Image 1: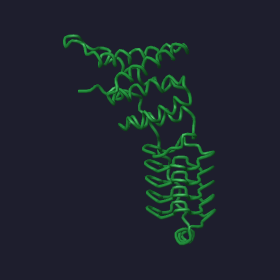
Image 2: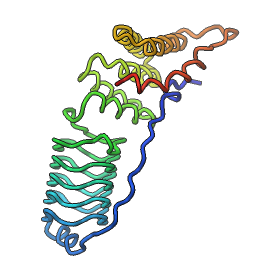
Image 3: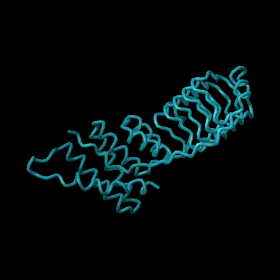
Image 4: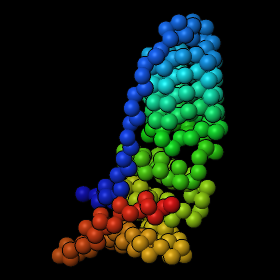
Length: 255
């Protein structure tokens, strides 16, 4: 049975925000669906599941708590819109303008964001698992690192590696990203590449004087080496058990 290195990683906990009071203006909702022109509209709590809103003008609209799951918002103008706590699960936002939008607690899981304008948007509290086409110029290296952790926790190791790659391309000395990518690569069976990343993370932690990071990385190096060169059956593998007690500190070491 393959050792799942990732299983011991820190569990990132998030708290879903309290649902806002529903104050949907039904005339505004009707206007939106009939004309697709609803700038500054009051649409909080609106039910717009699967709605065809391609090219809709929702500039500065209040969509807090609205349900836009799997809606087609291709090319829509949502600049300055309030989408706090809204559900955009599986929604198509390709080419949409979300500049300056409030995405606090917004559910963007499995949403399509290819070509979307996310200028001035804070994604730190948004739910982004499974997002497709996340613009590479959005956020900082640590943000992509967090996205990678979330994908890896869900077992999406290839997506996790993609985010770790982005984090590393933006910040080549982010040791935790190499460490996390090493775990994901190991779970994908790419042990040689995983070993190289584990060694790289160890070297960076050493250069930064992080003793704990160095120890974590060295344990990971030894675990991967054991998977590449399994010990004789009679020899106990104590390192495998020790790594679990140290991994929860990894996220702290990243920042």
